Length: 301
Image 1 (tube, rainbow, N blue to C red):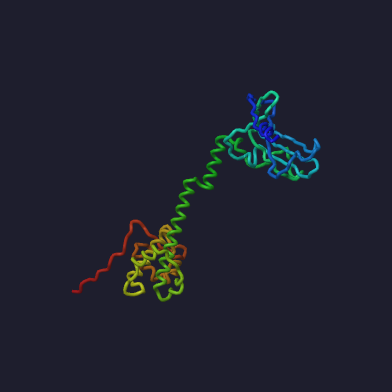
Image 2: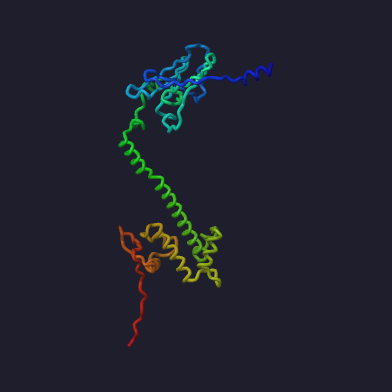
């Protein structure tokens, strides 16, 4: 008995295919699904579920499918122009119907070439035979309107190339800021007034080795004056990169535990110019660079 059932399942049919094309005066079949799990065939009554289809007079390919169970306050609505149907589609759907008597597989196109996602809605919450208002759909836009829309989106969000460039710039600035922090903490660790604030700061091994090579003194733990000046110059140059070569010295002076007056000489040695802008003392790095000339003592006669 079991073998006969298996043989029956494995039985093959030699069928011929018949392809039907869409007729302008007829609506092809509509295919939809219920993501909520609703089963319209659950009830044994024939008229337990009402199905309605609405089409736009000006654009017949814009359809709305409404499934209304009689004993429920909820109806299920799907459209060919919104939700999943509005997404880009690179395939064509068709419905196959097998007629076993004539051994013919009939293939017919489906309405609007869309699968309707039937979402539950409370009855009366929205007029089902009206399309939602809003922006024009992609198919309604002219070539000029599409170009304007792409330009607006580009201005708002930027192109992929500019977005990638912005991300690279963010990473570059983050690396510079991190390096500045390590420099300041290295200086604090080897000073009297800032040692406590940098006590638990952790340096990446490769950076710590670089700092020891550049600034450390083998004879003492404290930084020598010339090495400390070199470290401060590193910090100031990097802050100029961050601020696009025009910066307010007050913030970095606090971080370095220095007064603006004492920091001014370091900026001048780097070729920077100082000027007042809205009561702020701004530091800029002009091009071409002009470093201060060393003073020479005149010989006494």
